[in-house]
Amino acid sequence: MKKKSYYDSVHFTGRIWTLTAAFLLVMVPVSICVYYNAWPAATDVLKGLLGVAPIFWTVAVIEVVTYVPMLGAAGSYLGFVTGNLSNLKVPCALGAMEAAKVEPGSEKGEVISTIAIAVSSIVTTVIIAVGVLLLSQFEPILQSPVLKPAFDNILPALFGGLAVVYVSKNWKIALTPLLFMVILFVLQPGLASSVGLLVPVGALITIAVARVLYKKGRI
Image (cartoon, rainbow, N blue to C red):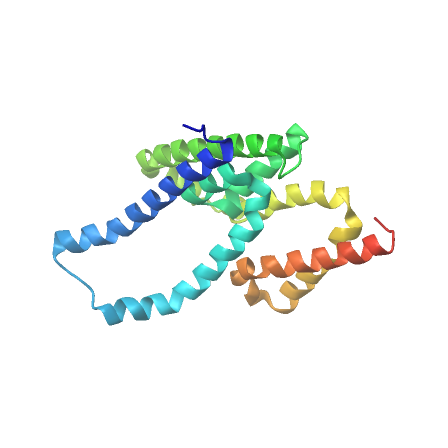
């Protein structure tokens, strides 16, 4: 019997866990309906899906296309199953690869990315478990007016730190998409809720700028 390669093994295991996670997520509302014998009408479910599914499906496709080349096969499966990619797994993976001085998409990058995502998943699970058990004790601290601004800016702080590193590497490429997004959000603040849909826009602008600069010999 031919031994499976690393990537064959990763895709085989990853598909199983992805399908298992999807099944478990679907079974939560199904179990509630079975227990209470309360089933929503198909038309109500369809109306609800039509309102949110197109947005989430679009963002899901965008995240796969954008994040998989950075995280690698194993890291992507693990990240998509455990969730919180944009605000946790991607920053952790990029930060770990930067610290290890390896390139995203390389074999070493794949290993570092997978380890970083796995560790962040374990740490997140432990913190959530502790938080649930001690929620009543932590609640006054978490809702403190002094700490609230810090919690509101965790995501900008994470990506701000990463941006400094990557922008400084090649500011000529980063400047145009950065200015475009800043001006766009200043003129249309409401677009902040659709940031996932704007990821490919920024990626396309970056690719176009990089190609123009490369043709002119600027990079």
